[in-house]
Length: 113
Image (cartoon, rainbow, N blue to C red; front, top):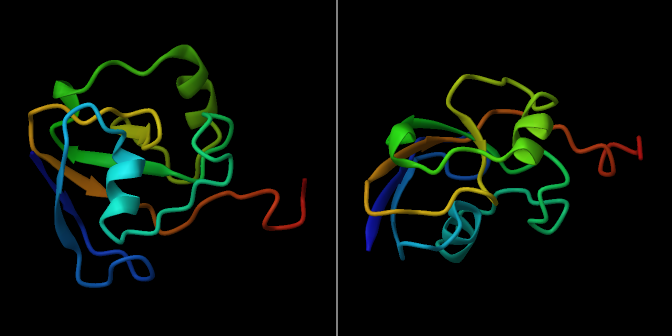
């Protein structure tokens, strides 16, 4: 099991939390399985940016993002060099520290589909 620290997020985990994840599991699934209800409007199919996270520690241990993910990330709110879509990140053996941005861009939820 790999330790993942989720930094405090006003709505999803105000106190922050520490979870354990099986290597090979997506970061999004790992958070959902441990009570961190991160948005995933496209049902984890790499078609939106609602599961955008910033990998504060452990970023370099992750597989590089594919072109589809990179293209979508360009549209994410609060994009940073360590930004990833949590549905595309597979947990490895290196512990991670994750920040969930304050806002997401969910066109369907906002009535802009």
